[in-house]
Length: 262
Image: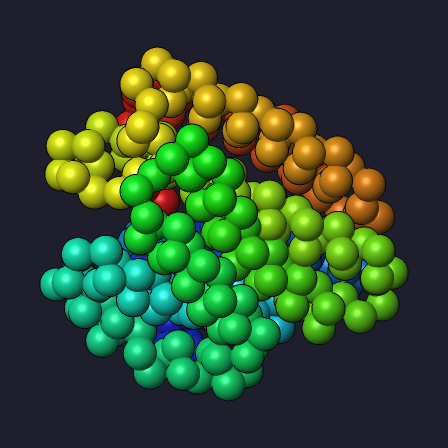
């Protein structure tokens, strides 16, 4: 459904940016809303000969699509500053118009992405010290936390404010988790290419141990936070992601197994 919304709102190229971050936001928003998401059988651009169940057009899916292009544009801007000029400039060109449209609808999301990534850029401009993993993950957490919170405030107005705050917190922690997984997964390549990495000052085993401990703590906090929410549906799916999905990914990454792409 998010992929379909991306294509309808921002053109077919934007569908290349579909990701798990927006998918998680969509699952959480639908699970907490009184109205069940609609469903229809449609073909997919990746498999046009067979129909699949697809979520019907919905404001939740549109918000997730808007989040996707906002993050894609700001990530491209960050890539350009980090020395990946060709890749970053190409992606910025693809998502420039889409991001302007999405930012007009969701200025809160755009502001959270801009401010959080600006803080992250400052952290990454200094030589990494022992506090680099904590500082970098906190900066990226403000991006996803701000986005999740903005979506909850607007799309779940009937939800108690304490539960919307819990969604903002969960967004922050999932952002920290994503940054950590990517950082430890890329540590060896970053060292070879002389790119900044928060674990650069640690030897490989120490880096794995530190990342593992931080990831486990985030998983436990996410599980506790999301378990308190008043679900209308799909509570078991959310629980499975927190208790089985995230730990499984962590185990693969820490063991040196490369992750597949969406």
